[in-house]
Length: 163
Image (cartoon, rainbow, N blue to C red; front, side, top):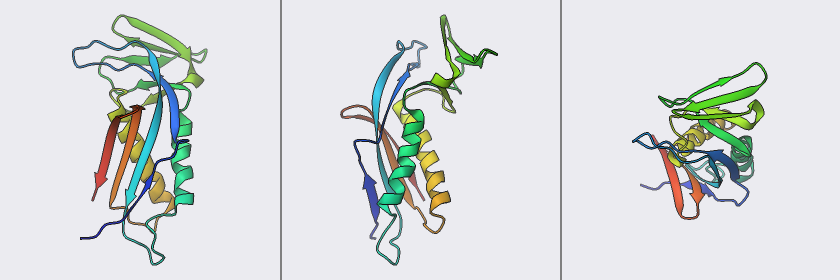
């Protein structure tokens, strides 16, 4: 069986964010940041023009997603113990066990994930991209996708989708 895909690996598909990871034993990293980089593969049948997708129209969709995360503090909005709330003065308060943080609302993104791991970020970004591709290219049947988020060279979380 033959399969086709496009792969996108561009230096500019990156975002810098702060986060802290919470481990299974309840311990947590200190608040810190990474310069994350995103890698994408999208597969599907070839069109009558010999394309899976147009690179030039696909890259901006990915870039919009990563640019939206850039220079923010990422909060796992679905963690069982971590809580957050927005005060009337526009400050977001975050509490995890004995820790307390506060930051301006415009600096914080609360993601619908249970931890800010690269695996969860890859899944969230991958699902968002899959949705965007479906809206932008309704005529294309995407039968497989891979999105990886790298937090350090050689260290990535990977999400895969297959029909």
